[in-house]
Image (cartoon, rainbow, N blue to C red; front, side, top):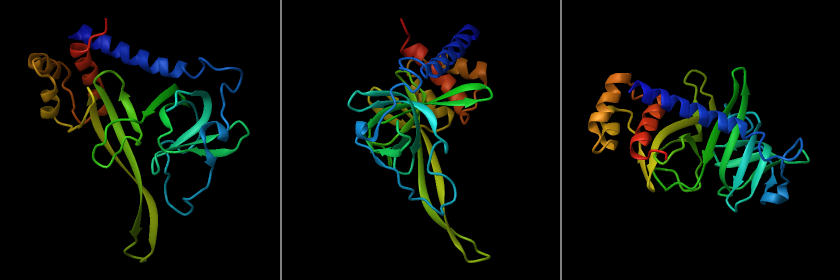
Length: 240
């Protein structure tokens, strides 16, 4: 069990490093394959959110990203961010002009956030089956990218809330998140409890119980859930 966990940790670190390194691979010159509004049927940016408290974006500031389009095109080192109200990509083109890429035109996007601890990668994808209030055009953050995937829906809505003392009403962005397990074309909403994950380990109940006993896993902790899914994939979908 100890060796298995070491292997899982090494694998997750390699995934994160690979995402970070992708920022410099396959680019040409200082700006890589920067895009123009015309390249992606983009439209000029317009600020529709003046006066609303909070942010509609996953990360409020532009980050360098690699963008994979639904038509197979790829653009590297693009300054971009995701609008999670509209589920659209906002970007800065090669002329410094801000624009939108319409909903459904981006299939995958990798962001690279430079922090004091190094470069942190974030992956978002579309094209997953409809479930709850999400469609196949909705972006999901990919927390674990193997055959049995762990993804997170991050939906931001605009809500009006009143101040009981002053009577004033203000609009603000409200974020709601849910985890989903995606495997073999099927989406399941994750319940952060032992019973949900135990049901995934069909025929390997003893392995699941050993893992739970050894790790004392907290089923409400996203990082620990990712580690459990890595263990799951090692059992059911081992790499050759």
